[in-house]
Length: 425
Image (cartoon, rainbow, N blue to C red; front, side, top):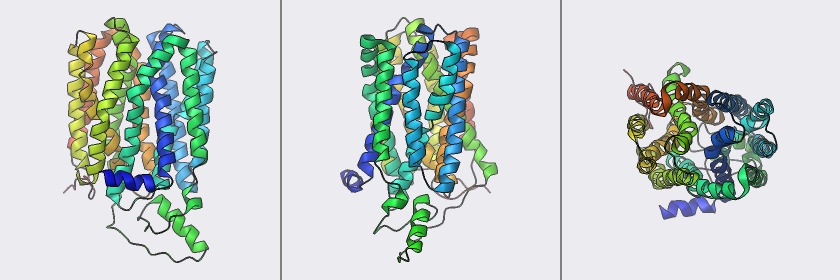
């Protein structure tokens, strides 16, 4: 394990990109847990208005991510869009420091926060292109390592965010987040695009966007290159991809509803504090780290579809347990279940979708994140309606039903080749 980390650290583009990923995670962990509280406490939004606000942000993020993924695959450039998305996020949170009109907040959410939401998918597709991998196992390990850094940020981000919120209010919290987004943009702007950097001594991988760009550039310069082709990976027909994408969407719907509803339930329903909310979120992120490292190291040897089905089953159990909880401190140890779901879907879900469409890393990465974002679109208004009609516990039980459907979708074999893809007869 240590030797694998040592090799990654020696890759020139890895440490800067790892730093940028960590800064992005810090910014996200400062804002996501408290954005719903901001809407309720400072803007006096109703649950339905809050749901609409979150829905429009997510919808804008889906549109931006989809367009950015297709554009980057077509032009082979990801850095300019990633920098623009990060700057948009920074501007959006600066605006939240001053604006209190609901209509203007909706416009800011769509124009800046939603568009900036594409940064999360762009930074992973940029990493897939910018960091050379010797084989599929190393590629999975790189993705898992970057995703683990996001979890590291979520370990200390919410507790520190709660302290900043207590000391400076929402304006100070949002300014700190805007600074983190800006710092991330500065780091990314200094990382060279793969076509500019070149990759010497490493054989390109078939179907890899980095490889295709570099081979074209080297051909134009009449430089010889030795290519070692790995076994071909079949592209799964688009008509078959809807099942795993829908399953991930349902998991994303349930997870995003949790992000919106659970902090409100803890503070308003169970009489908890913001510190207790941050402890719960921090513990979940802390537990994700060892799980992600193990999954990243062994991801290429695992049956991804079966593990994703297991994650959906655990998600169902988690929501049933949350609905049955009667005290804040009984919710905290349950985050071990949530951490398992996040670790599996983040580490294996992304590479699973990328394996289904190996020739389109940007589009497939955006597809993975958009599955969660579409769930976020639905979760905004749906969570507001459910909380208003059947209460917090009923909302959690509804999320358990969604996880059950996701389990059924993942349990059915999918046509395809290796890497955990089941072959249908």
